[in-house]
Image (cartoon, rainbow, N blue to C red; front, side, top):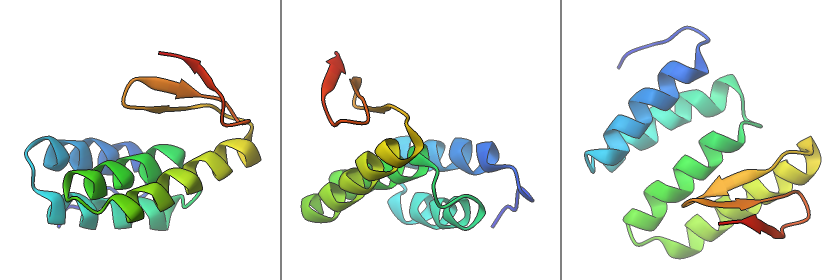
Length: 95
């Protein structure tokens, strides 16, 4: 497994590649490394939710998305899920 020594973007890029090629187990392992580097990274949590949605694990995906919303409130950030933007109050901002 490739190591990107502290570069979370490398993990995200490789994880997204595996996600796009439907190699969900590999994508999940890569995202585990990203979690270790920066557990509060919203993009990592959302990518993990997408893996779970594609695997049909909708309840687990929902849990991940709820975690992303919690983090967005905590970090005062907005999140994008499938092209929809949500702010820290969990209100849809735009499409």
